[in-house]
Amino acid sequence: MQLEKLVAFHKTLGDVTRIRIISILANGPKNGQALAGILKLTAPTISHHLTKLKDVNLVTDRREKNTVYYFLNEDVLEHYSSGLPKMVSKKGDSNKMDNQKLILEHKKILDNFFTADGRLKTIPAQRKKKMIVLYHIASLLEKGRKYPEKELNEFIQSFHDDFATLRRELIIGSIMYRENSIYELNPREMWADIV
Amino acid sequence: MQLEKLVAFHKTLGDVTRIRIISILANGPKNGQALAGILKLTAPTISHHLTKLKDVNLVTDRREKNTVYYFLNEDVLEHYSSGLPKMVSKKGDSNKMDNQKLILEHKKILDNFFTADGRLKTIPAQRKKKMIVLYHIASLLEKGRKYPEKELNEFIQSFHDDFATLRRELIIGSIMYRENSIYELNPREMWADIV
DNA sequence: TGCCTAGTTAGATTATTATCTAATTAGATG
DNA sequence: CATCTAATTAGATAATAATCTAACTAGGCA
Image (cartoon, rainbow over all chains, first blue to last red; front, top):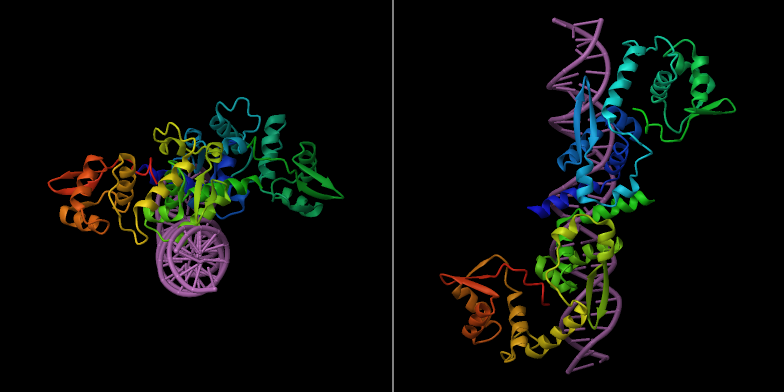
C-alpha cells in the first residue's frame, strides 16, 4: 500500500539521530565507525539506524576491504523532497564527482604511511598527504574536549615519536587551536572534506 | 533549533492515522465527529492527533456554533512538500471558494430533515437536498463492506420506514451499487463533495 | 591457521506514544 | 436554568522503538 510506504518514510525521518546521519552523509559517504565517533553512539545503534535508512532506500552501502561505506541516496530524498535539501546544504564541494574514488585514495595513502598497528612510519613531505595523515590522527580526538599539552603529547606519541613536529603541524594546518597550552579541535566541520 | 522542527514535522507525519486525517482534510474541512466516524476512532483520539497536527501548523481550526471545523494548512504542506501532494490530489473541486459556507448549508439542511434523534422526517423532493440526505445516511455505512439486502433494509429503516424508496435512490444516485442483491458503497471518494 | 577489525544480531531496559474510558469544559438551545 | 452536543483533559494500558552490552559473523592479513 502506497500509504504505508509514505508513513514509513516519514517515521524514518522522524528521529534526530537519523536526520543527523543523513546530513552527515550529504557531505559524502562514511563508514560505521566514523558515524559512531561523530555522533557518540555505539556501533550497534548506528547499525540499527542504518538498516532503517536502508529499508526506505535512503541509504545504500558498499563494502571496501574490511569496512562498509554508507551512501546517501539523494534521488529518494529529492523524490520525497522534504525540506531537507535546504538544511542539508552541501559544503562547497565543487567536484564531488567521485567522492568514492577520493575515499579510496585516502585509504591508500593512510595504508602507506601507517603500520599495521597504527603507528606513523614517517611524516609525509607532500603537503596533501601530510594533511590527510594529520586529519586521520585528529579524527581520533574528541570534538569539543580540551587537551592539556601533556596529554596531547602522549596521544601523538602513540603514533610517532616526533610529537613536537606533529603538534605544531596540527596548529599550522588549523586542525587544532591552542589557548594557554590547552589544545582543542577546531570546531569547523572537519569531517566535511576528509574521511 | 531548525533540526528539531524538521524532526517534529516528520514525526507528526509518521503515523497512519494522521496521514489519513490529512488526506481527508485535503478534500475540505471536517469536524471532529466526522473524522472520528470515518476513521472509526474515539473523539479523544482524534483530538490527540489534531493537537499534534496543529502543533506543527499543518492544521488550523475554526469554531462554528457548537462544532469545530479543522482545516488543512496547505501552505505548510507545500513548504515541506513531502510527496503527499501527489497522493493527496484534490478531487476536481472547481470552486472550493467557500467550502466553509457549503458545510454550514448542508448542516442546515440536515437539521431540517432529521429529527433530534436522527430519524428522517420526510424524503426531500428537491434533488439537491435529497442527495445531501442520502449522502448523510450513506456516510454511516462502512466503506468496502458488502451489505445483504436484508441488512441494508434494516439499516435504512432506522432512519425512515420507506426503506425501499431510499434504497432505490441510493442506487440511482450511484452512491451504492448492487450485485446479486448484495449492496456496497461506491468506491469513489464520497466524502469529497459533501459533509 | 589464527588473530584483528568492522558490522550485525540478540536481549534487556527505558522512553515515547497511540489508544481507550471517564471526567470536564464550553457553547447552544429550549 | 437545565440540558444537550462537541471537544478537550486526565489517567491507564499496551505497543513501539532508541539505546546499550554482550555475543556472534565475516573479511583481511600475518
